[in-house]
Length: 376
Image (cartoon, rainbow, N blue to C red; front, side, top):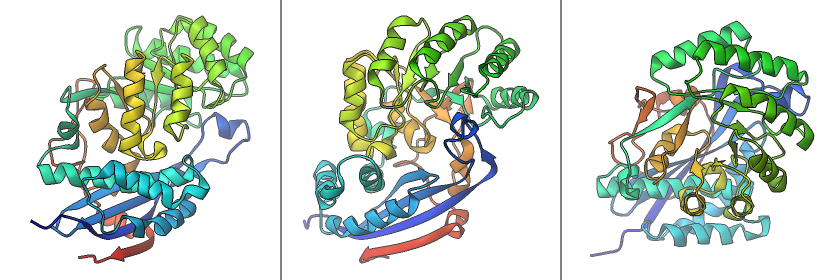
């Protein structure tokens, strides 16, 4: 029997518009402008035996054109390869762009190829990606972020929390880190009162505090029985996060901005987080994500992957320790399928692979398209 090989690759740059410009602490402190769109990099892989896989990566604000350009440069390296040899393919793509490094934009572009190959492998096996990876559960606890941004007025914030609970979401995350810290306390206090003492509540400072402020705010927030405080410091300050994790009763969560296994290892070995938040597209796909998750579980950390719930629901389902998945409905218009929620949990899809397909809307929002090899 002839070996199955990658015969065609299609890359698609899709720009997803957001209905309302999004503001977190980085916007209120002048570091960034409100976010109005997300650049999505889709990779579609086809093989000689007729198998297909769909992969995804993304960039918020800047970086979308760069990711697409880098993906186009390295894509020919994958043609002719056995799609089952995913680790080999990852290394080959990394070496194709070695001069720009093994983190950041370069590996985020690789992430789309890697996810596509895992999707293809699971489809060929007739299994969901979660089952292929060895699922531990058929649902994962989830929390909502999209209703808790800083541009949202307080009363609307309370309405959003009610809507999330009615949908079957099991936790609420609020953005904090405003220039006036008293406003943060007011909003968190009001939402905690509204939700009740037991309902899971998290906060996310988006790297806005210095070390003294983070310690002070962390101690104030102890009264609110939070699941975690996310990114209280600069995303690369492993030592500072470790100090907070050691001093505070409230767990510390971070990791979403890290883009390599080694960057995550720096946080793991220094005990810098209680919840580690790897993002599979940002870290280079499922292959490096699994390495991060294994290291985290060995160190006793809980995984709470960032964004891209359509992908991360499968990866979270395979974790031994009970994880959290972030519910963001922003990407839903890109796909024909929807994830289901029930009793505070997200149900793991049983469809083969990721269980998603591109919608007509995704095709409409496509700005750039490139093909390599033979495509059907």
